[in-house]
Structure formats: structure tokens, C-alpha cells
Image (cartoon, rainbow, N blue to C red; front, side, top):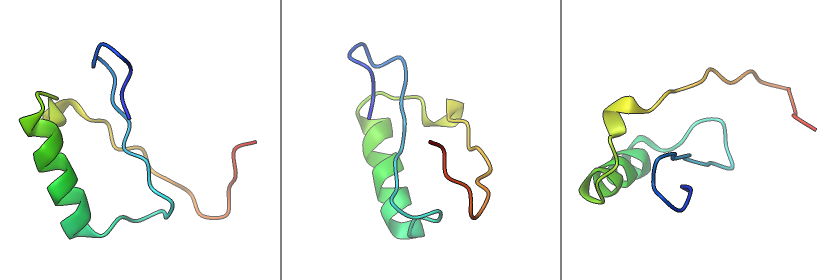
Length: 52
């Protein structure tokens, strides 16, 4: 998901860990689309927490 100008990008997942093959394919596609995947920030997720 990105904002209209493509300056911000979010990778969303329904699970805390994504399948490495799916993530790799997604990153390759995003890079081909012109996103700087090296600038992504990978936050640490804690189990059992819900943002509400």
C-alpha cells in the first residue's frame, strides 16, 4: 500500500511473519515499480498486542 505520490509504502500482512518467498517476490515487484526497498523500515512486532 502506498500513498498516491509513491513517497510512502507499507507492506501489510495478516500474520506476524510473512512467507519468505512471498515477501521476496513482493519486494522484487516493488523495486521494479520504482520503490526504494532499501529505505524500508522493519519494525519489531510484539506478540499479543493489538492496537485499538
